[in-house]
Length: 297
Ligand code: HEM
Image (tube, rainbow, N blue to C red; front, side, top):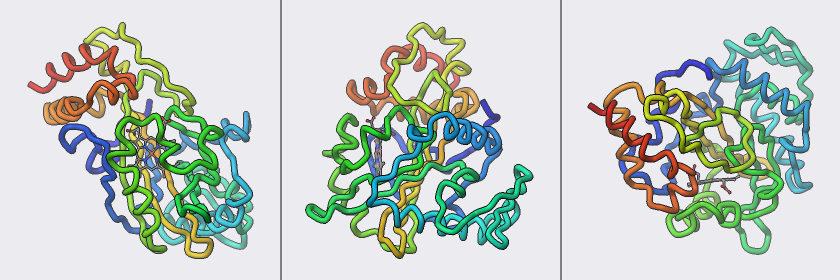
């Protein structure tokens, strides 16, 4: 796993007190949308490996997403040119990637060409003409946190989250309202976290954590998987973009101070049985709690 970037997401999403499902939205500027981190080379190599191995597993677009995918490609290229000039340059239809020492053709409207250079995954959502609810119409998704794109494509958000405890009562209608009212030109972010004993970025299915992890090994055997998610509306097609930047770090790198340990204990205290079961934390909770208490001082 890459060395931790002290606070890859600020504030870290487990710091808000006892866990509860909430939207937790914060406005950001276009310069802060795409995040290039110390894990860039590793994540890009993994993304390209996944695309070459089985593109259909990581790239699916319904016909309704065609225009939005092309518009997103141009918006991303413009964002790189405007805000990431130290790493990328666009000139005469070519993208120079200084991080990897590459220069590649970047045809207009070609989402596949630009996402090869970005750590983020991108989902596209459109409102249904009938009920006005946003549906997932396409995605470039190389780093799913335990979900399969094919199972979610074409579905509205309440159905996408059907297995997430408390999603519908806590935020279901609010998320749809938020997307309906999101103005083009605004960028909004939220973050979440999961624990895993499997650091792989591409994870399709839920897998219980091993309950045999000794307390002393919790910090290096468990990983915290953080997602920085951003929302914006494309001005031409009106589609909503949902980007996901994934960070995976060893737990003992994320929980480095007594305050970190106390914050994570507080967050866990808000999880009831279904929340713990959904996140498969249950089997390892006693050892995790012991480990955190020993670090909390
Ligand atoms: C403000 C908006 C949203 C909120 C509050 C939200 C909340 C959540 C929560 C609480 C989870 C459970 C895992 C965790 O705690 O991280 C989750 C999982 C998930 N979310 Fe969202 N979400 C939002 C937007 C979206 C959007 C736009 C998509 C579109 C693709 C999406 C797709 C998913 C999927 C596929 C899962 C995994 C579901 C499963 O386990 O079957 N979410 N979301």
